[in-house]
Length: 573
Image (cartoon, rainbow, N blue to C red; front, top):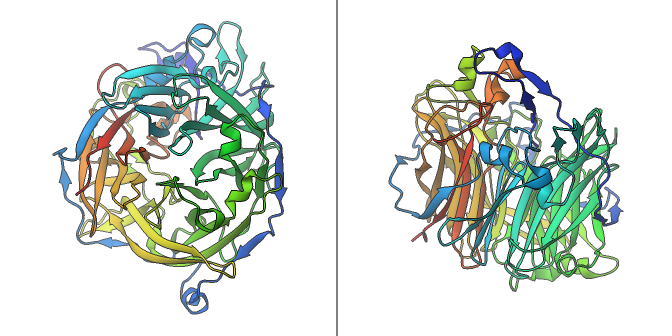
């Protein structure tokens, strides 16, 4: 979720003391079709031992500092030669998101950071969501086809704020988009939280909002559904589902969240599963829900559901959806990951679905909490006004990022701390994992690490990775790059037989990150927020698409200058 999303008024270019803040606010009731959820007890989780688990895990320390910082002696070369780029264009920027909306939604958006981008591609369209805005582009030209549209306008909810009346309406955040090549339908998931319309205080109810297109054209009609999440948490509810993540196999749509109490903090991982066929056919499918599934030997946090690179003909063992996560987010350093398997997903079309959730913890290369990244010095219009200098970019933590199931393997990646050559300063880099998961005849899940490694660049930091892997196992990884010689830039690396090749800057940043989230005046700690995640996907023809954050040139708002860049990557030989 955008941790800081404030709208500011009374700002003059010369007197910073006149800045006043409007508190972040949310919403009351909405007119949505609410899908009931059937909760499955959290003890309905089969912990599957790895065949070598007793010996292997006994040698893996589980506490903080259990692994050494990875040392990268051969970082990737950095290239500005875009030989792998077939099409590239600017996506949504902060200015686009802030000014999105027409009619009753005009001037109804907040200024938000960080930019969290999602991407879906199919049927000749590119659909991008960033924070509270949606846009549709033509896939063959990159031309804007529709939008930017305010997210609440797209979802038919009340505007975020009515500035003329001084009232607050719906707040939505963390949209995720997915195009299903099997059904030729588009899906968007969003978190929503209610507020007092007068004071803006957080109140119940909370929910997941799910939009499903009526056709294969995302510029046409959509149906809107919701799943109430107010009581979905281990304790301290009312709760909301932060950063909903979306995955899909041949039978279901799977959404995971980190539940947080509106009062007391983290309240446990949540998993929701439902039939995509029923939902896309305007039916009200049963929703199967796991509340705070336990991870023995670890701590469940940010379960990444996999997008299957090919859902056509994907029916292994009546449907299996895989998830991946770190074994314990509380560890500063670790060398274990968790692989989850949800079996019999074909039963999601039944009145009473029969699903089993299993998990295995396996050993991995070491990884740990990444440091904040430096950025190249340059003009900061907002920072200069505030007499502050923003020097770093927040890279957040080592939670697992986007997961893909392709070529019979589960691909995932995260941001990690590394040491590069003889550089005394730690850097942020990418750790990736390629796992071969199987569910055995006796119901256990086995996960074998078949490949792992790092993507790192000398004198630079890489963060927020996202995989796009085709059914043939070829693809690319997208991320943001920053460093003392680089403004925050959109970058990627293509997958080769030996791992990932050179890092390529897709769109070079033109200035430092200069948004309000890092400045002390607005409650920041000196590190600006440029993203929580990047995006990558494969279209129905196998073409690889990526999107990540950078700092573009051109018009901006005073409060933030982030932008996003979208590209189609040419076939990898």
